[in-house]
Length: 134
Image (cartoon, rainbow, N blue to C red):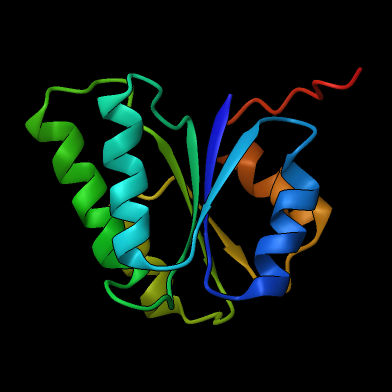
């Protein structure tokens, strides 16, 4: 399983990596532009991401714009096995949550990030995390 973690906050990225490394191969991006590049490159190399943990407030294109781009990319290329996208935010704003689901996110995780929250949001999105170290 492959995951892309998109967050400009060092501590949040570090925690997410700590929680996910046992379950999947992880790449990181710190901006909307890097996220788009990583997403495209993964498809070009035929190693697409299974799940993307996407912060909403990031430099460049924000997370919602990146999510919209991802879904348009998938539709435009006839991709039926789309990436699971879990939006991550420090804001518990119902309008933002509603917008994320309108752009077809699969789950929404509110910071602060904990191991249990990551597992719950992943499960809610239909991501089957299996510990690779066991």
